[in-house]
Image (cartoon, rainbow, N blue to C red; front, top):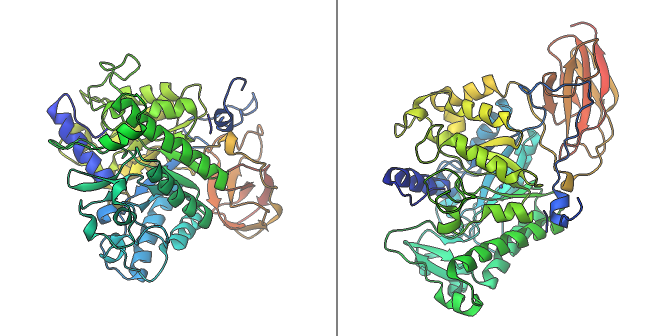
Length: 519
């Protein structure tokens, strides 16, 4: 261990929330979990004052949804070459906009976008569940992300078994078909029963298999735990509750089931590879103040009460490295105001070891259901607001398709206002290790700077700095001109440059100085 899209009181937010749910698919007295997640961004020397317009460390990510071919691949049946080309296009767009992380859905519904002995091939590759696409996409997906300095987070849905409620339509080796007693039919779909220990064991086995076999940087869950409400439908887990409830109330038992899975995944991931991060992107409203004095001043669906997702418990127990709440409402929304929720989540992580990023509704930009989404600068304003509060350490955008289409130029605005410089990843002390050695033998030949690779370095940060003044040039990102993944850099102007080595977690070495006298 370590330290929503909803049924709402108001019909308007119910429609918005449920639509979003369909579209979307992480000291003394502290526990080991808590002590492992202390933020490690070292304070700069007192004489060095960071420019808050250029944060040195900030997560900037994009979700890539594979379910129903939302983002990638764009449709079923594409050739491997076409699938690769589409993915590279998204990666190039992410790198061009100075993002540093991708969250790709590798398990939409107890299926696999990778070669697995535990679950069948996903239908979203070939159009037929269980059909071999002729290649294992995962190594390519990870390599192309890493090549561009992007973390690769493998996104799993833990409990969705199938989009069709009939197990007979699934491949013969599908776990839901082999273990029908694990499943519950609900709302025309098939779900694994979160109350069964065998289900938890299977989910953990699937996730551990991916962490052990592939070079992923993170494991990620979205907001789907117990299913979102469907009118007239009942999630029938009475038998499991009778067997395992142990006198608890049904709602509390269901929350305990989710909390147990989260804790077990956390343990399994870090036992397999200590550097791999684990986080969750919960529905944006934990509870409303009308339900609980500790809740937010909102009137939306309560994830705690409706889908039994208790993000506050995960934060307090330290069973996640980060939370990434989906705040898919604009500023000023009458029932779920963005500013109110961002502040609530900031308060929720305050004093904990859990990092906070915010999920942004890029897919909503340009929609007419709220006037705020017709404004090109709405999301840019969210980023500005987040930076005002120190608890928020980054943003992730849903989703890859809109990263390419750039609705209303919203991403252009974000880059212009906030992402004009690259950013290093936020550090997590509990996943920390020593920084790699500084680059050696750096020298310039014309505009090209090269250096000897450093052991343990995944990337290098390059700063162009003034020739004089305080030695504060790496305090923030105002002088950061590039993060490169090979030991070479092409300068655009003469001057003094500093190069540092970064490991996979972006622990940073001391700088090496190199001078370009003329171009």
